[in-house]
Image (spheres, helix red, strand yellow):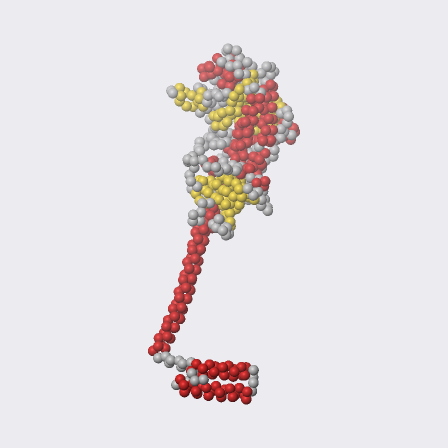
Length: 606
């Protein structure tokens, strides 16, 4: 072994042998000779090569190089830390921006920004027709539970309760409760709830929502067994004027029974229970609001039904509807209580009855059976609870064969048809009236009870009331007689005939048995007159005789008298005051409650 490679290889072999011996934990005596041989070879290696055996010594780094390397490492660390810090800051910024974005979105949702499910609706100008379908509040029933509906009506009340709003929407007679609470998904915003709660009462609104059935009936609504979970709410027309009174006060039930006789002054007494109630004059001054109450809606729907039933009954009996003038020369019935006017230089007046013209039509013109509905004017300065200066007259005139009882039979059938019809067709309306103005159902007989005037006077005298057979009945005695008849015969409705001739119009046929009496009659409801009629005189000479007795100028009724000179049929009829029928059927204390826009001596507006 003389070369460097050979010596290195041998040293390597010996080193491996030593490692193996040590690994096998052999005693030093075993591997020590090998170590000595390896050391001798390393010495020879140095002789041959001039260098120590083993890897070359590491070159010592110069101080500047070491500093440079340390500096590079620090830069790397700093750069890494800076990058990490920047990434962290960037993440924090991104999180903050995301949080701000969510907060802005939430604020926008709460503010209703961009929401289309609430707000003021576009004014209805008939510019377009959509596919929207409105449901009548009257038709809202539990069977619609789960269905979405759209309703329109007046916003009667709106209450903010926590994060929700409760509303009562009313249309004509009917009302329904709507409920609107904030939704987490933003579909119902806080702004929407506040918008609904802040709308003025009596504004016209469109409400969309799902019909649900409440756990308990909604006492404040007519549709007690349903309510609407509101999803959309728009104001169609905002009430922008101060309400003259609150609907809640206007709908409050009566406190006690108001008298229905005596003078009417318009003065109101405080309610005994201390609750606010709206007086009659305040109601009439703001009639357009007052008519919205369920009771008034019902009163005038009943009144409308009476008109329909009146026509229905008479048309079935072959009557013809006529339309007579309300501008006439002179006075309708020879009295002085007429509204006079200048008719192109001629004196004229407003008709206080269609009497003369309906006689002409029935008895003189061949129509034989006629009726009319229209305004009647009375210039009576009567400030009572049962008189008006203008009211709606339902008049009927018919020809008879032998006796005016034929007319009374038609009137009896007519009123029974009307009373039955109201009770059958206006059940909801009757209950709405009764809720605010309690009353007992009208009692009536079939056929209608008939008394003579003398019999009525006798009943009064037997009850201790002074009443002469030939004196006119006072209002007080009429009321007393009504009470007596109710107690004795069990009816609120009756007729009485054979009135004194002196208290009836000039065209009334005198009684053939007693010249002091007449073939006349009145019908009563709850002790007050609602119809006055008679057999009419159809002989012109007798008409003139009776007109002279009344000191009526013959030239004022010349056309009327002449209409009977060409052959006139025997006939009779009567006139009904519509407002008084409604008032007494419902047992209301004041006829102003049954007149749309009353006209009395002190009121000519609105």
